[in-house]
Every structure is written in structure tokens, then in C-alpha cells.
Amino acid sequence: MKIRLKINGKDFAPHIYPSMILLDLLRDLGFKSVKRGCGTTNCGLCTIIMDNKSVLSCSVPAARADGKEIYTLEGFQDKAAEIAEFLADEGADQCGFCAPGFVMNVIALEKENPNPTEKEIDEYLVGNLCRCTGYMSQHRAMARYFAHKQKEA
Ligand code: FES
Ligand code: FES
Image (spheres, helix red, strand yellow):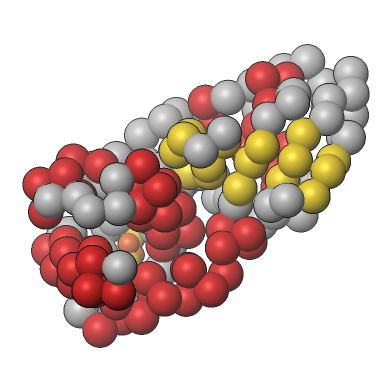
């Protein structure tokens, strides 16, 4: 079947097969920032934004994306670079495997709640697993990032 959707502001009309998962569709279309970690909705690596909500693309049938507006990390390169600087400054940028999903969820949080408390940041990002950092450096980096955004506002 054919679906129509918008990805990072551009129109697409791909053919999909009935059991296709959105994660695979996005990668087939060239959006390689969308990674498969667990494939079972447990790691956060496949996070995208669909109709302004953070979504695990490994959990969504591709058919459900018909008519939707999707953003991947490729659509937020400047924002991703800005967030990455805060992660690097706190030593939270180690192997980088978790980074695409983590950064997408930070962007989704900022859209939903531009002034989160530290507790809200932690709660929002709890699904993004990281095997390297122990989370404290990520926590410090994002607390500093959102404080910085507040000063800019
Ligand atoms: S690959 Fe989707 S949550 Fe892990
Ligand atoms: S930095 Fe290695 S998994 Fe997060």
C-alpha cells in the first residue's frame, strides 16, 4: 500500500508492506539517525517526533504514519549541535550510541515544556537508556541546557 506523510518538512509517498514498522520505513527512506537498539520499546534509541509528540518508532506500524508530520534528527541539525555541546561540556558524550534518541527526546521535551524542572527533565528522559554515562553527566548537561534556554528567552 501507499501512504503519504511529511518528514522534516518534505512530502513523501512511499509504498509499504502491511507489517512494516515505522522505524524501518524511515531508515529505508534514508533517515539513518533513527536507530534500532532494542526493537522492543525499551531503549529510546528510535525516538522521533510525530505530530509534535515524542514517539518510539519501533512501536508504530508504518501504516499509522499515513497523513502524519514526522521529524527525525536530520531535521534538527542546528539544535542537535547545540545540545551536543552541553553534553560534551559535561563529559556525557561518550560512545554516542544513545545520542540520537536522547537528543530527539530533549527536543520533544523543549517543545512540550520549555521550562522544565530538573525532576521533569529526569522523568521525561527516563526511557533513554545509556550504557556509558551513569546518567549524572547527562542530567547536569540538560539542567544547564534548559537554564541557558531560559536566560535566552
Ligand atoms: S529501538 Fe525503539 S525503544 Fe529501543
Ligand atoms: S554514551 Fe554510550 S550509550 Fe550513552
